[in-house]
Amino acid sequence: MQLVILDRDGVINQDSDDYIKFVDEFIPLPGSLAAIARLNRAGYTVAVATNQSGVGRGLFDLATLGAMHDKLARLLLEEDGRVDRVFYCPHSPNDACDCRKPLPGLLQQIAVHYKASLANVPVIGDSLRDLEAARAVGARPILVRTGKGQRTLAAGKGLEDVPVYDDLAAVVDDLVSPS
Image (cartoon, rainbow, N blue to C red; front, side):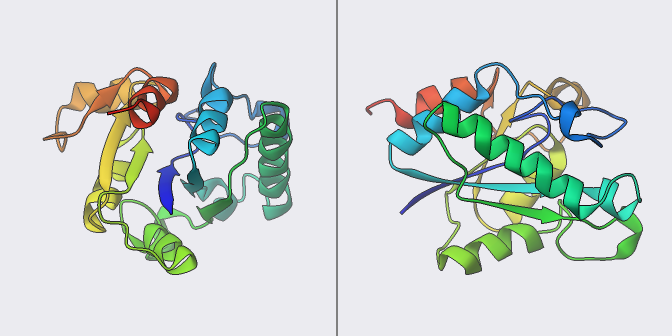
C-alpha cells in the first residue's frame, strides 16, 4: 500500500488563525481536491491527520467537525477522489494528550490502523508541528507554502532536508510523476 498523510487546514482547505468553526468556512484551496483525486488514481491511500483544538476549546463540536469532513467527502466525490480516513486530535493544548501534533500519537494511530510502517511515508503539512510529528515516526516531512507555510518558512527552524512546494498540487506532481 502506498500511503500519504495530509494535514487538513492550510493544505487541503483555507486556514484561519480564528479556526475553521463552521461548515461554510471549510473552503478547499485551489487545486487541492483535484490533487487528492490524482493521488487516488495513482494508487495512493490518502489519510488526513489534523489537530482540531477548536473542539477542545469549545469553539465547535464533534458534529460540526464531522459535517466539515462530510463536505470534504462530497466535494472530493465530484473530482472522483476520496480521503480514506480522517484522524483528528480534538484536544486543546492544555489537555496533555499524545495525539496533538507535534507529538506522534495521531500518526501512530494511522500506522496501527493501516498495520503499516510510516518509514518514508510522505506527510504533507504547512507547519513545523506537522514536520516534527512526521520526523518522530520516521515519515518523510514535506512543507507547502499554503496556509501557515510561508510563516513556517520565515521562522526558518526545523526545515533541514525538508522539501518545500507551493501547494499540494505541486507535491502531487512530484509524487505521481514517473521517476
